[in-house]
Amino acid sequence: MIAGYREIGIMKAIGYTPFQVVAALVGLMLIPALAGVMVGIPAGILLSVPLVEREAHALGLTTQLPFVPVVALLSLTGVLGVVIAAAALPALRAGRLRPVRAISLGTVPAAPARGGLGPWLRRLPLPGSLALGAGDAFARPFRGSLSTLAVLASVVALVFAFGLRGSLDSVLGGGGALQGDVAVWREGVYPDSKVMAALESQPDTATVIGEAGGTVLIPGVTDPVYLTAYRGDSTRLRAPMISGRWFRGPGEVVLPRATLDAAHLQVGDSFDAVLEGHPVRLRVVGEDFNFNSLGVWVEMDFSTLAQVKPDAAPQRYVVFLTPGSDPGAYTQRVQATEPDFLVVSVIGAGSLSGINLLDTVMLILAGVLSLIAIAGVFGALLLSIRERARDIAVLKALGMRPSDVMLMVAAAAAVLGVAGSALGVPAGVAAHRVLITIVGAYIGNDLPPGTLEVFSAPGLALLGLAGVAIALLASLLPARWAARTRVAEVLHTE
Image (cartoon, rainbow, N blue to C red; front, side, top):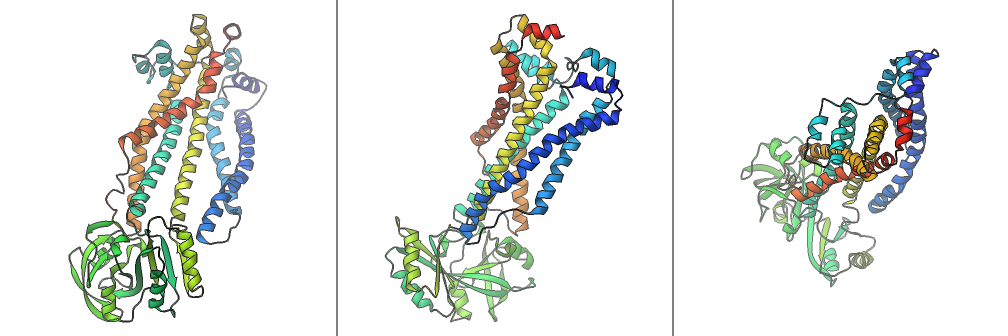
């Protein structure tokens, strides 16, 4: 609209109705939008192939082209709908222009110099060019707010992505249930004693922890609750503790929040249960973080299960290797001992696959939003320079150097970046806290200590500076164009 101000006036002068003007301008925006969608959808599919192949390989699944026609169609209609909505407002304003004024003026009137944040920002103790640029950042409040919102969204995404990684590391990386080097599963007919003999015969074996499954009936919980009974030093495998302690002997259990709430229990309570068909007295000694079955799970020592089921034996074995051992070579040696009865894999090859994928997707989203923010700030500065072409020419005629003009434009961008970062950093922290808390409640758990406290002041400061850097990067080309403005040409045109 700004670029074609005079042409819009001519269109109306020769008989275009307001509706036709709106339709023409929206149609002009739909052409590049359609081109972008037709390139963007295939590009998105192709860029997702490496991620899908990596995760499928880690999980041992076959790879398929990640193309879903319904998703592609929804992307097409959604993007075009957003473009139509975004173009409609300025197009409606263009439809209301008075032809004579638009043709005679030839350009959009400059933004008012008074009101808003402009005068206040110009009073900052800054050099003249920087103060002028800072005052121009919100000369058009709506446009400046949209640019700030774009920077805010990118900063929120960056803060959330880094916070999510920190929370996942807190839950799973620092003492979580995914520790260990090698996992071994045995077929039911293969004796536990032979498995242990095969593992202990390996010189690289440091510790073996067996895991047996079963069910227990708990008063207040409708369905049988699955359990894991650990044989060996299970403290090396335990999930982060919320309260209490890990079990130390028979009759002691650890429960997550969902199970405690369903059974109306607290840490320290004892209750009567039915374990594998036998009545037992159990005592809750701790609450842990366990997302199995949405927090409905029981963990206990193997001795508790063996009391009621003497023939119980682990189905899974977690092996810790001696320092410097090669898990891949160890896996191959153990697998070769009984290829028909043992399934051996390196822990971490697929266990963290979904988590790494989620983290990668969040970083990609943050990158995309950063590009959108760059485009938004770039457009706002370019329009501002076009509107203030005469003012810039006058300033240059009065002696302002090209470097000062570039600093003036960069200052406007910096103000937008600072505003977006100042709002985006706390918004990102709040979004991380709310969403992680909701996820924790959904999977039936209280959050472990430290899950939410993953940010540091220096880290948040760096993420905030990233928003400012995004805005400054967007100002490079507009600042260069403004600095190269030809004074005589602009003033002659005016």
